[in-house]
Image (cartoon, rainbow, N blue to C red):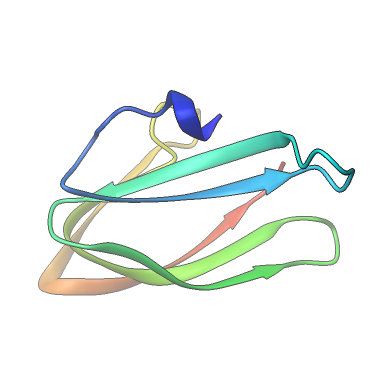
Length: 88
């Protein structure tokens, strides 16, 4: 899970789902990184358990690195926003 991530950019963020039991064990996690900034500023759980994350990034960003849905984006203004939906 999140302790398995390696550095993929200058700035990082991750989202993780922890179990509801007493130990709070990690269930899944995803990572994002950017050249200049990568910040989650809003997180919300949907009714189906999906996690919605909104925030900002600078220059180039990589979301869900190493996952089948890995996505790389570039900002044309130096900074941009993102909204992501992560489904366990």
